[in-house]
Image (tube, rainbow, N blue to C red; front, top):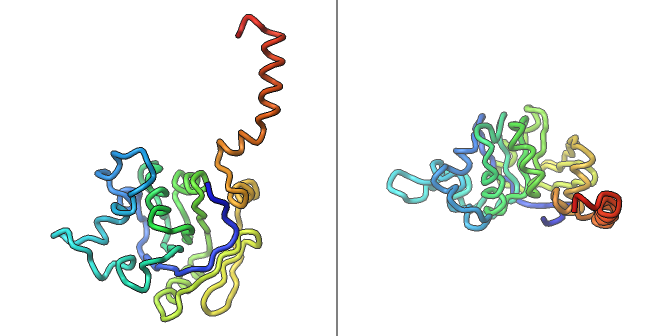
Length: 201
């Protein structure tokens, strides 16, 4: 998992509430167990017309947002099933941050496990950020260490985050990486157990 510290990039506004995981990555794209290539299925039903051609009105299909690294969303983003492909698809698209007034719990937890930063801000602030992202200047700055979002208008907004999860993102550690940091202790424990309880070996 790549460390996350700071990011300055384009923010794409997606003013839709209750975006579920099937909308993020439809079920027909879940056959893979790898994380690569999932961007093609990201928001497939939103970004694709009935004839299979790209919908030019969808935000991520517009040239100004083609390289967006931040997604602005409405309430309850990531509701629905627990598919981990949802954060995988967002990351494969090049998105590193999702800002919303609220997230579904399982999706929120899956974001941290995969290196995607979900930021919760009050609805009125997200609405303001959405409006700014729709304007001519849609470049935002995220500072995880300082826990701030700097908007195009120069205003700085503070967000809360669990300090353990913050540390893991800053270090680029998923749950396996965190466990491996204690490899020496685990080995010593296993050796002690082997000597004291050899019948379990």
